[in-house]
Image 1 (tube, rainbow, N blue to C red):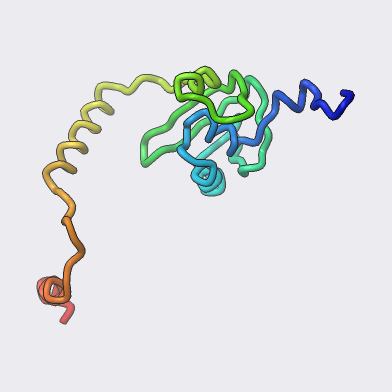
Image 2 (cartoon, rainbow, N blue to C red):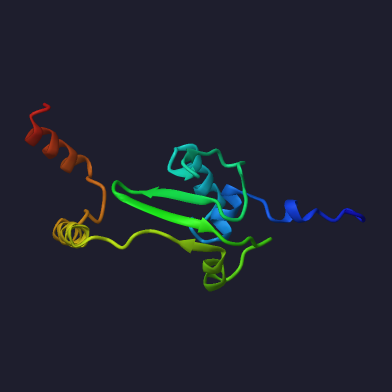
Length: 138
């Protein structure tokens, strides 16, 4: 460890929020930090804070949405952002394939969202009054 070089152990350990961002599992580091603080990321079965250090072989479970869970194993590290194809080499995806029931539920959810489009604009003053009257608020 001369000339200020980090040891092998230090090179193979990275903060979990930084790694999640570099591995393209979250689009930004701040999103990864928020997910860690909200308890949506577990490392080897324990909820983690963003500053927790990772090592090769660790298993990360990410909760996305209500029923979507992604399980990955840490395989490698990168010192900076890399292309998404290269980032996939940093982890092994151990998420089990969806069951036919889950696939059908996702399909139905997608159809429901398409049949109920969101309004293109926020309701104006007149629309708000009408909505209040319909709801019996005034």
